Length: 183
Image (cartoon, rainbow, N blue to C red):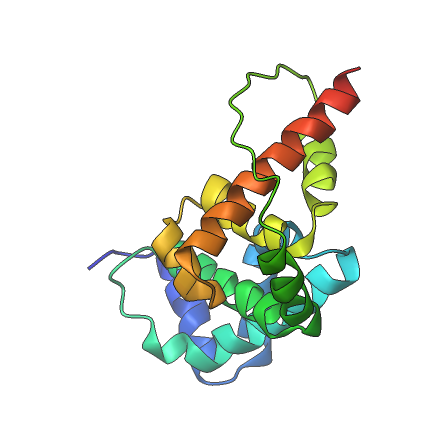
């Protein structure tokens, strides 16, 4: 069982009592970090804000299930990640893209290249946000959040091969964009 600081413990207790001040404190403490996570999985800032709000609603409803087995921030990040992936998975765009992507498996090229660039994090994030949505979600889950292909397949409801192909295509797509930025 992990210990958490007494401030956050008081805030959690208040949130469990539906205290608006405590909810605001929790939101203020973690929203900026979690917004960054939401941005990685969203195609716009407005969509990221929607996912963040939806995620905090889930957090407030499920706070009672926090069992102190991990740090509170880890639990909170996990909840928000699940909301972001669920939001993407439930979108109509996901259903359309799955069929289009599964029909065109040619051109999947695995290419290892070292690309040195001095892009700042915001520029790299913006490039990732330009990826086709399925590639972006899979790329973030694998490259940034370090989930296995099996876990990603379960989260997205796709086959492991489709997830692997999306990741490889996303990585190639990003390398091609980085080459263009470099030139």
